[in-house]
Image (tube, rainbow, N blue to C red):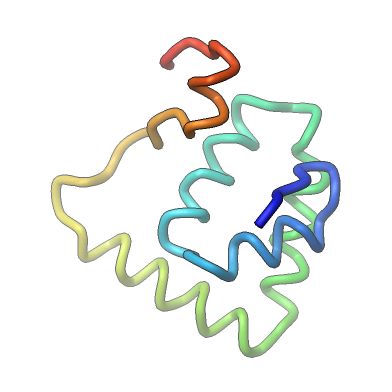
Amino acid sequence: MLLDLNDAQSIVDWWSVFPTRHGSLLSDWARRRPEHRAAIAEARRIIGADPGRRVLLERSRDSAADASGLAGDAPLSHDELAAGELAH
C-alpha cells in the first residue's frame, strides 16, 4: 500500500490497516512535518465521522493505553530512515 501524506483518504485507508501503530505515527508526523498537517487533520476528521472507523479509533486508543512501558515518540519509519532523517 502506498501512502500519500497529501491525500486525506490515502491516510485514512493506510491508518485503517493498523490503527494502533499508524495513529501514533500520524501524531508524530503531524508534529514533525507541518506540510502534511492539514491532510492529517482532515483524515482524523474523516475517521471520527465514520462510525465503523470510530470504533477502530477507540479500540486503538484503548490498546495504546494498555501497553505499559511502550509510550513515547514513534521511531522513524523505514522510509524516513532511508531518506536520512535524523532521530528526534
